[in-house]
Image (cartoon, rainbow, N blue to C red; front, side, top):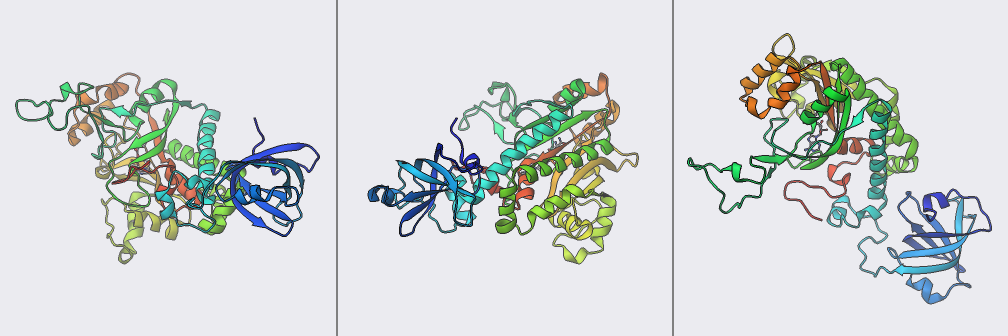
Length: 460
Ligand code: 4AD
Ligand code: MG
């Protein structure tokens, strides 16, 4: 394999000829030499290639422009400029693909909105390139954390017949002719004629299937795309996003929270270790001080409060909110942010929410009103993790499902887990993009996934 620019930049000066290939970011002339910054995306700052005007043909040097791809050969030498330790003293330069003057990424700074319209090119910018590198390292850290802690990676289906969260945000999957679907006598659509012989959707969460493997392999995790027909046009919602969902047997809510905290800290620490140049960049240009914030988060225990305590705290400042908080209300982003930014000044885990605002599978507390749920709230974003201890008592779960009008025949396999060798178990889901947003300080979730899918947006 050819040496990438990230490696070339760390090489010692020497007589050996090395090759450097990439895309030209900038070109700058002085009297005798031409400075070309070549970047191949392996790191933030490219390699400075120096071409002696006495050696290179003028036409060749003139043909080199921002965005063109080049392959250069030369020696690594100590750099006289202050910005870099070494540079490449070119002996040959070949332009592989030129980039005419209409190349959309000229040297000036572009807005993130503009870049979303050219998402196929935006990874060539400093910001989106840095996001892509950090995202990749974070994904690796996710696997590393779980693999080092005896979790098995399970691939749950993307097409499913059950609605895990019961929030009705499903994208239907069908091959029926929408103009003329088969109908039952009463006029309803006859899904027995559909591809799967029943009504199916894209999954909103891999949890239910994940639980079946956790009650066999003890500790498992899923990490894959999930889909929600989320109509809200916000900076933290996507219609297609990636979720990390661990599930642990013989584990109560306390263990769940402990794992969530050490998992997040592990991933954050890994980014600090592996992506220093990119984190410096985010701290300087995207969210002032974000690197120090992440360092602080890694070193400080998360705060804890119950939902009831949280609402009491919010009610004290009721006038601050657009949506007035009260016991029983679903916490809004403004509430979540207030708790973590103004009350706790660090991530906070809120537990024991009213059962009415949480999913059917959460373990009922003895008060009969609240469930063993936990959300991890982070400054700037609000909820980044949602999880719970699961209801593992067969009768209690059946009663809860009946209360909510869920049909037993749709969840017979899920109920079987409580019938055969049931065990306390817990898990959570991390919105992967929200975690990337938190670490990088990026404001809009659409800029931390290569091709965002949201209401009225499915380009590329
Ligand atoms: O809180 P949620 O809905 O929890 C679940 O789906 C559980 N089944 C997880 C589990 O216990 N295994 O979603 C989990 C996380 C949220 O905290 C949020 O970070 C993220 O997924 N999330 C979204 N991220 C981007 N766009 C959306 N539309 C999201 N909806 C949820
Ligand atoms: Mg949630």
